[in-house]
Image 1 (cartoon, rainbow, N blue to C red):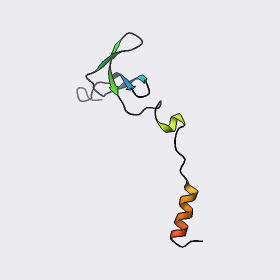
Image 2 (image 1 turned 180 degrees about the vertical axis):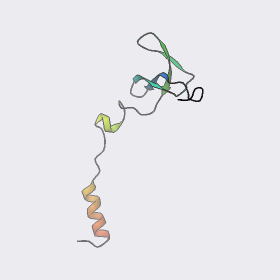
Image 3 (image 1 turned 90 degrees about the vertical axis):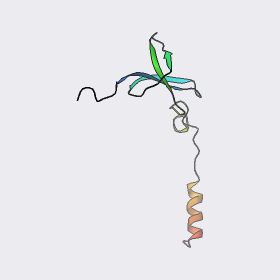
Image 4 (image 1 turned 90 degrees about the horizontal axis):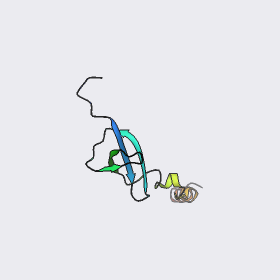
Length: 81
């Protein structure tokens, strides 16, 4: 890698305030906010809207679409029997 052209790759905390969930990972994203993590160190924190703790696919609260009804309606509308 060329020196001086890449952003810093450092530990960052991503936090989902709606689900009260946070995780520490490494990223190049920057943030002015900081948080003291469980290990006692201070890390930049980035608030996210959706995480695995709040996304319907991962929590099992997703809606099931009525695909059979949609197919029947399509066939009625366009003349397939």
